[in-house]
Image 1 (cartoon, rainbow, N blue to C red):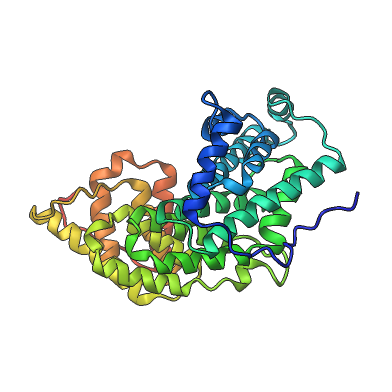
Image 2 (cartoon, rainbow, N blue to C red):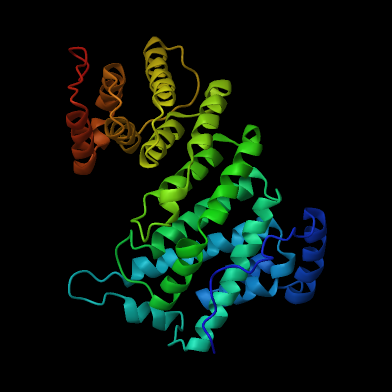
Length: 360
């Protein structure tokens, strides 16, 4: 009855079977275990509880290819998100806590069940990390699993409101945050750098968001992953990729990437200069009627641009004038929070953007 440790065994990084071998075996096992009526994805989709989802994924563990592993973590992240939204009851209330867990038939867990859950989740996490370490993941699966695991880390680290079942919170925190963070996020960065030319901008945004999320956690101890993870190689490679393929990146992509760079506390003035120059260049082309790429802006994107640059202490008056000019036609779409965020960013940057008379 000893509590299982979340520390992986010494042979945890043994090379897994080849990707083709895994996929072929998965097809056979998927048919044998799930049958024609319930293949793996259908069974995972039908799961209503975290326990059930983990148990089914663990049943397929030795045969899960990267695409199905990413699908499992996305499902788990979704279930955790639902638990947080439904458990929040506001000051002095229990909200939907009892209703939610009653609806999904969540019962009190004993120590043996907790040990089983921790063992299964640890095995699934090691399987995921192995696949990344040994280059089994393509860009779409890598970005998906990184985003899902970062969302889970965010959920179990207390960065969101509400309450979560403490068993799940403790188990997932032990596996993903306390001990095993760096053996996952380091390989994610290495794999991204190896195949970055194959990444679409939205996948790079997911990777950057994942890094920003895990590095924005409140420190748990001196060995916490947000103190040890160096993501500067990713952002340097991102700059090279952007300059080679800048036409593929929308302003929304660039705003998200600038925010991630700021949140990761990266000193990247050249990258921010490149982003700012591209934003202002596009706005000038739009005014001249020369810009043909669909680059739709919205209040949230403009606020994100302004806040990312202001909090990075990267003052660019031309950029803020372009943001203000782009905001004027959208003022009817701004809500109180958007106005507040944009004004705060301008105040923080110490810039009062001026726009041509008669443009509002």
